[in-house]
Structure formats: C-alpha cells, structure tokens
Image (cartoon, rainbow, N blue to C red; front, top):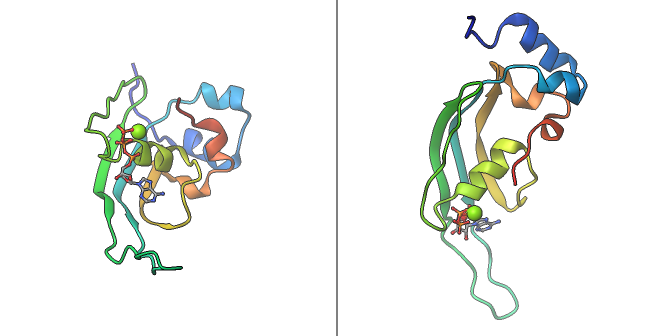
Length: 123
Ligand SMILES: Nc1ncnc2c1ncn2[C@@H]1O[C@H](COP(=O)(O)OP(=O)(O)OP(=O)(O)O)[C@@H](O)[C@H]1O
Ligand SMILES: [Mg+2]
C-alpha cells in the first residue's frame, strides 16, 4: 500500500486544473498553518459607538488531515469552527476580516489551484 501523498503527478494535476470527476479520485492531504483571522477596528458612525478593539477569532491555528481521515472540529459556540471551515474551503468570508495563513493541498499552495472552491465544500 502506498500512503504517500503530494507526489509530483498529483501536485501537477492540481496545478493544471482538472475535472471534478478526476479530482474526486485524487488523494488529498489538506494542511493549514498559522491561520489568523481577526476583525478590524471599526470607526463609530452615525451616533453609534465604534468597535475600536480588534478581535482575534482564530489565533495561529495549524493542522492537517490525510486522505481517508475523518477530522472532528469541536469547540464552544463562537469558538470559530465555521470561520475556520469557511477559510479552509475557500468560501468567501467577510472582506472586513483580516486573514493570514497558508493552506496547502498535497503540498501545493491553495491559491495556485484553479477553481479550488469548486472542489471543496461542507454543509
Ligand atoms: N464577519 C464577522 N465579523 C465579525 N465577527 C465575526 C464575523 N464572523 C464571525 N465572527 C465572530 O467570530 C466568532 C466565531 O464565530 P463562528 O461562527 O466561527 O463560531 P462557531 O464556532 O461556528 O460557533 P457556533 O458553534 O455557534 O456555530 C464569533 O464571536 C463571531 O461573532
Ligand atoms: Mg458555526
């Protein structure tokens, strides 16, 4: 059995772009490092008080999941589970949030993969 992922052919296929059908057959290792998401301070407006303190939602979160693995993300309400899943799946999240961090798919920077968000989803 060959458990290695991130081999050149798989990585190249990711970069080249491919049909969803072929992508479904590719073994995927997803890893993320130093993900930091925070709110920007908001100026007050129109008689309303501004939110002057930036709030950190995710503070340097790193992790990875291997092909065939089932990963549970557990946390209290407001811990940032949905924010992390939105970020990892490439869903649009508020432009008002400050985002930092890296996401790699089989060692390839997610930002270099064509149509990544159409391959990844959650409900
Ligand atoms: N666009 C945003 N602007 C400001 N704050 C936000 C934004 N999105 C999320 N937050 C805040 O980030 C924190 C984490 O929210 P998130 O929805 O990720 O939590 P959660 O773990 O999914 O919670 P739940 O279990 O209730 O679904 C909350 O305090 C939320 O108010
Ligand atoms: Mg949630």
